[in-house]
Length: 187
Image 1: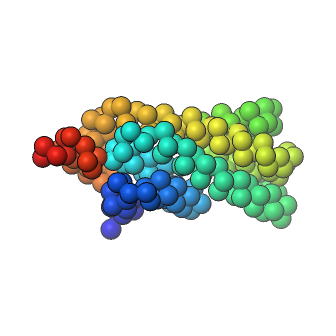
Image 2 (image 1 turned 135 degrees about the vertical axis):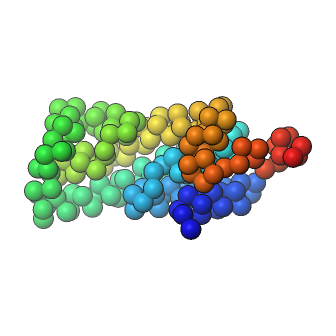
């Protein structure tokens, strides 16, 4: 069974209940912690199932991800103390230079874009000062923007995601709509 299929089933099962946002947050927490799947594997199916809750989905997934990143960042500080060569990887130099020049603002921009976060967090935690509050706030607001864009687009243009990303994430049927919607009642 694919990870996306299990996400889809979990989200679909919890979509009408009170556990929906908790399910979204838990899946995002696990995805951020393990890096086993992209954020779109949680946000897009969730926004397809509950388009009117796209803002709440954004808030709980961004908060969940930012909390994991905060603790992840604290761990990188400890790892960097023992393995400083991690911060010298040549592919990471551009992101590290950016973080060295712009600090927490760079982390915010990195969180709001598809740029890799790990090198920036390693550098910021190991070479720069370990500003935990700054990292948390920068990552939270960056994630709110990025996840909000995904959720809003999915909620407002579901046909694009049903035929494209939604189909890749678990072959969402084109006729399927969120549980309880008028379109579902007609089917």
